[in-house]
Length: 503
Image 1 (tube, rainbow, N blue to C red):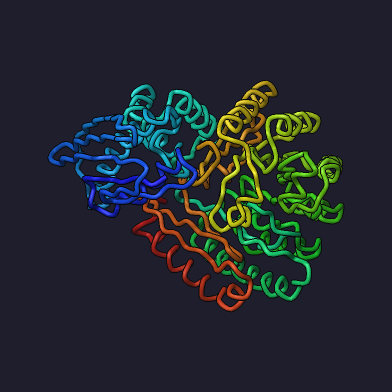
Image 2 (tube, rainbow, N blue to C red):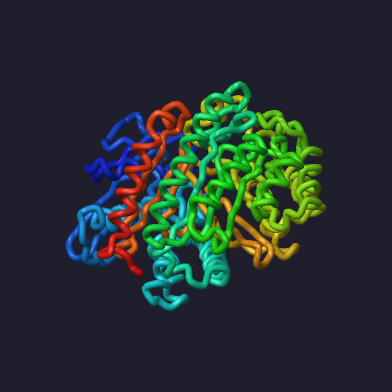
């Protein structure tokens, strides 16, 4: 879909307009000019004084016109970026409205294309805005529907029940530890994940660097008296390494990190059932780790083969029961809506198989065509359900979780997500993942250790976020982990200096 935009010359509008267009059309191209080659033309009139007033007029090839207008007072902005954001939101408001009118397609998340919608509600509540007014503002400013605002409210309430001190955890940190190896790489994946077979040299070198990072960061945290809220081992698949390597890694954690016995939650993703063994489960129990993920993604064998997962459905079920027998009492499972070749019957089957297991938490993802994934590069090979069917599958998940006592406790969204939907984490009461809440709501710094691990440093006073990423490939990581560790410690020193510390 080629869209001619008239009346907006600032190229900063290009990307946000394209993202909103992509909610409606498979592929879209924004042209900031009048051109005969466009499929539709949208003419804007923008006035900026104390208010921002904008009108949009969409003209299709039949000559039919759809129009919308919006006006909002501009609040005092500290930076030009903040000011432009207000103008961009006003433009997005009328743009979305005319596209909805023309297509007849309602976008339930309104103009939002970002990852963390619940942050908006948290921010309003932290500012002391009453709940009803906060909801009204979300609806008016972003065009979010009542259905999605209700979901946001449910999640925010649950999070504040699980972590009552959520807004005052800036003086603590969480730790993400990335293990960049998997048995094979899934077709939809863009995480740093390398097939582990034949890579033992890389694994050994990588683990040496990871132990170094853990020691150095742990030493700094101990010296500063900073506590750890949660630790999360992700990847890749952290259970791809051997039981002996896992044992040494968790021993390093207990030796290097401060007050490990006071950490609220330690999670290890054992997402690929083909990596789980009795020996590895014994190591997890040895170090008091009982929250793991065992991820089926689907209970249809043909789907697993199509997406590059080399385990069987029966193996998922067997490993789940093995983990239960060996004392794992907080198991998460993931399902993905909209996998290639899957529709309502296949997803209904996955839910019925989940019912036989009843994990403590269930994360329901909606397939996203991530730019660098094998699936996106070869879209013609992977046929997926249409928007209506994907929405029905999400409704099935909502009904199933409610019926079985699961409550939504976190959500996030991705670019190019099917049906413009969301990923939602559900759990039985008191089994929520605190780490998932911390990473989504950005209330504290998360230090990423390991290959491809991203750190997110949050200033305890201003809330400003600084991103810092370790190299994604093991060789680059092995060549530079010492320098990257020093860089992270420099950033931490600035954030938690006596002047900046909230303690």
